[in-house]
Image 1: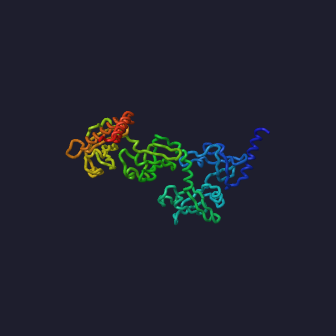
Image 2: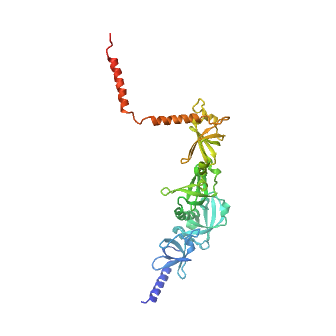
Image 3: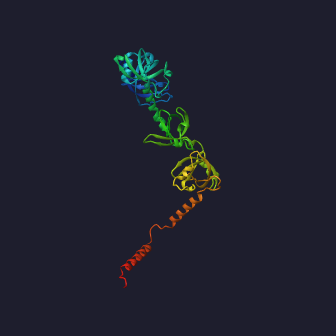
Length: 404
């Protein structure tokens, strides 16, 4: 047998294989080659089928399969070989094909014709189907009218009464595409990356940002701005497109931490040149605690006026009565710690040129530090011996008979 005989035998076998497979049948096979316009699928024996390359790409035009991957598809033609499709075209959907699509899990095209109670009426070829509102999209609370007249790809999730009662879902298709794309999106997310996303929701503790394919990261309220943010909704709103920086990625929990303030200059970079101990600055009280008041000196730069720096009031917490959130006043800088980003402050009482409690506070701190330095870690042996010796002498004296 020569080479031409081999070719003829292969073609004959392929034609026999094609005859065994009927139009409208669901088949499964492995991709053996991918070309510019079509891919070749081995559906058993020596039979190979063709499928349009466009059906193997996602919404962004990215190929979602590789050579060796197995796919399920519908036979749409047997003339001159097998032609496959991974979705059932709307105009060619027969009752038998719809049933095959249901059992094979194949997508089917449908047109949304009108809104009905609880959802939409969808036309699948010569059949009518029902799509609940909850199954029309991944995004909830979309306007119902925006889907009318549109042609979408659906999955048949219920097939009853011989096809007279069909329920379809577009959301199932979108979620599958999203899961496939999410793997690639996560691979592209690295610490330090600058990404553009869309705000999915806003909570009291921050906002969740969709980075693509349903992959979300948390933009915590503390990372929204260098100045203290009390209400995240004043910084971002749902649906808003924002640029963020990836701060942390936890591969185990799949959690992604994002930052917004990191895209602007850190105001603390100017502290060393613009601030100095003894300087008096106007600040605004932004928060009160049991141990003092936090004061904003410049946007993103806060200092702490410790409770001990306020003038004596005769009450342990009396200092807080003279300080209110939002109050603007002059404060003297007592200390600066650039490494820990801390600034110590003291309130300057009206009519005074110096912080009222600053001197007292400094003296107390100095005294404590001196006591810590002078106090030995452990008592000396000689001190202990002398103490016991002195006590023994006193006891002997007490027990000695008194002279008459």
